[in-house]
Image (cartoon, rainbow over all chains, first blue to last red; front, side, top):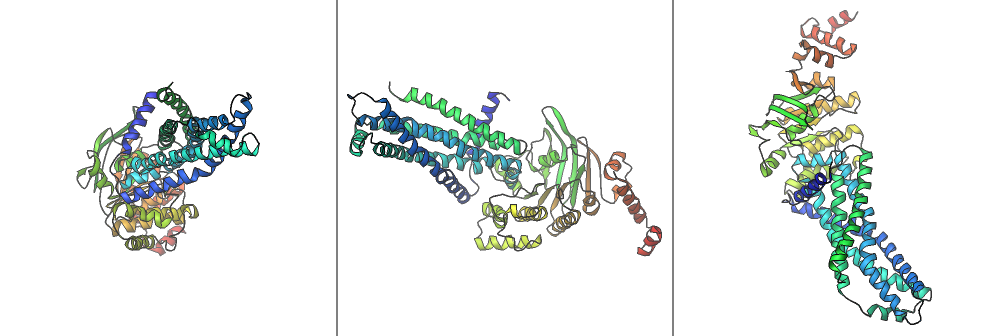
Length: 247
Length: 269
């Protein structure tokens, strides 16, 4: 199938998500379940990655800042801005594309192959609304929250590594965090995280929902979903940076 | 009653079923039989609305299902129960939750009332005390019975069974056939069964539709099938010598030559 056929099918799937729920209470239950799966389920890996990326960022920035004319507090500024602008939204979302994306694709793929989606259709349930919409909405709410947590943990990780290795003392680091802080960077990071959250949930849902075949095809769909999501995240990272960051 | 009128379905310009018509009555087991690739699953999927036919119509109680859109179609679908080949139970839900799912989705009953109904249908399929088990903990036959319980929990008017006996031993197949037959008569359901199982054909086939290469080749009852002169049908149904012998015996029986067990013993000598 050509790119346009796939894209058209993807748009029709998105359109199909928006219909009146048969039973709002069950949809709410499914939405809450997805919030737990996507949000709480990914919290561990997001926390670990965030702390280490902040720590590595602090150590490597200190390694490159060799001039005595540059204040040590600059390390904190650089860690803060790189974590907020790039590491927390982009790196975390790429990891989430693997963790959440593959789960969504394989879950829906398995439901398709084992005829569970057909069973729901025959019951009269709008499967795109019941199965995909709660995942997309849950991702749109939980992933930006995870990104905010990643920002805080990343900055804290930088402080931890900086103090532990004697690169910078805690007071200077905290002072550096407040220097030249532009709140727009937070807005920009959150905008990116919403776009990435939509990609992470809808693209794997597309590959999983329309899978044909057996176990092998579910695996392939899952891999493809992660690869395409990662590429789209990087592409939109560039587009959003070019459009939204004043240069 | 379900009426199938001149249904045609093709995929990528390859015609899979062509001009098939049939009338399937309530309170009967209507069987669709045919070799693999003959189009019987596609016909069933057209009937339940999973595929849209190229042309032709499917009438449920006189209402044209193929011409319906949105809410009307959903209303008909609520009257349909389906037993899938692989059972299609929701892996993440236990037996009770699986069967309760359609009730939670389409009724505003209290939990107590829903639970009573779940236990009622579980007892009906002879599966008490499995409420808390997950599909992975059940045998093939038990899964089929749970799926049957889920299919009938909303008291459907129409029951579709896609190869209900596949992967089951002969004894369990008999149990499933008997259950489907009993439920069909008890609730006056229009049951459509897609099967390869010749025992089902002979035992519960009130109406049999034989498909050959996407066309309706033969239709009749399980009494008439014995005397059919259709070569393709005979080649398909009585493929083995054992089945051919069984057919001969049944023909003798039908013609009254075997009056009782004593006569049968004499014949066997």
